[in-house]
Amino acid sequence: MTTETVYKRRLAISDIHGCYNTFDSLLQTIGLSKDDSLYILGDMINRGKHSKKVIKKILSLQNQGYSIFPLRGNHEQFVIAEIQQKQGLELALLCNRMKLDWLLHKNTFELKSKYISFLSHLPYYYDLGDRLLSHAGFDLCNSNIFENTYAMLHQREFTCIENLPETIKIIHGHTPISLEKIKRSIEYNQATINIDNGCVYKSFDPNKSNLVCLDIDSFELFFQKNID
Image 1 (cartoon, rainbow, N blue to C red):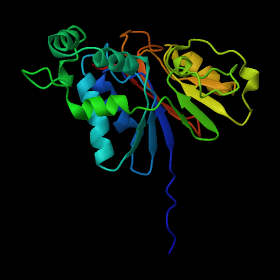
Image 2 (spheres, rainbow, N blue to C red):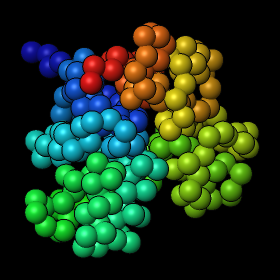
Image 3 (cartoon, rainbow, N blue to C red):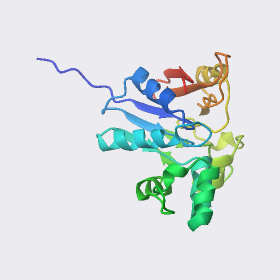
């Protein structure tokens, strides 16, 4: 009797930005299983309408035994920095202005510990050996590329790419680009692959406003048009 080999995929999604319905539909498209590892490359929140539902979905999947590995983007970092500096009414007004009321208990100025703990403990990057994952990239000019956390959250362009070994690829998001550019980066075997297609920015252009998932080993692409 032969047993079927289960292929364990390593998958990456970036820049969900509160687009819960789009995220949920993409998960169904890729057929996420507990044998897969899904890396979420930051900016899960803000801009879109359903940041809380996105975070709850991630936490729920983790609690069910799925291997979900989120990391921080510049939007998570901004929220963490802002709420750490505020308290009381000032904190409540901040959350209201930023549409982050879901971080507070109703009728109080107390933050919900499960969400704050989730955001505060997000790592800046994942080093998988042959794949380096972060929200925006890495400072490849630095002898220690894991030192510059600002670059991991904010950089828009890569320099010193020649310092990256040929056996390693960087997968990131942060800067929206067209689907065609994403596909070309894979086709031309580029060292860095940006998977942010600007999902939150609705557009009739089929090359834009998709949430993208990349199999970081086979480089198979999955995408879902914004349905939020």
